[in-house]
Image (tube, rainbow, N blue to C red; front, top):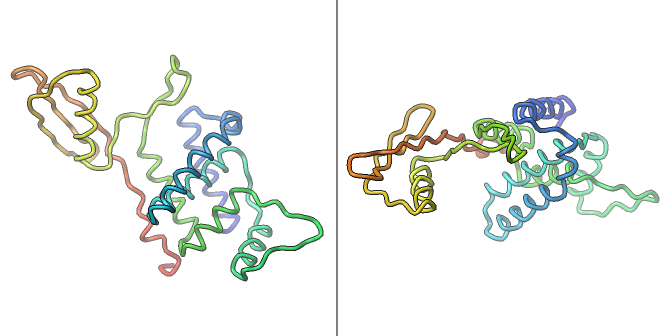
Amino acid sequence: MTQEQFNDIKDKLRVCREERGLNKEDQKRNFRVDYTKELAKFFEAERDNNQYEMIKTLCNMVIVCVNAGMDFCKDRLRLKRNAHSWGVKLNLTRPIVWSPFEENIVAIESMGYDPYKCLLETIKELNTRTGSWNEEEGKWVEDLGAYTIEEALEKAKKIYRDKDEKVYDIIKEETDNIFSIQCEVDEGYYEEVIFNIWYKADYSKCQSNLQ
């Protein structure tokens, strides 16, 4: 990843934070919690040999790092990458501490993917997951959304199960931007639940050999 590419990623994430009413101070305070959650997801994906989820969680960890204010160091990243490819341990008089940001960039590269392209895909997906700031809860709350109409259908059913309401019939419809799930909760009476269509990051086109 070049400095220019990193600056582009950083700027796109700044826009995301501003749209969600988030700030770096909050991101720094929550860094360990947010990063640990993504790390746990990575280990689960690694256990299941799920390469897609491994790339996704590595990208999410990079985003957590950038949002918390971690910066890009090209020289340290190059040294780390070389040490990794040579299969040797660095033995310097003055120890170098690698940031999680650099570790994850190298991990993405070692899996044969372009980190910059992967991050662009992740941010593209992130931008489809819209929401708004909730003053009562004091946090940004995501709108209802789903990747597929089948997922939207299951989420709609769960909403009514949680309310202990019976659904007698369901009409589902997909448009360019939304999934519409109409649930018959009384004879002839339908309630509509709207789900935004989420974009799913496509990492298959981010492989390094496709550059």
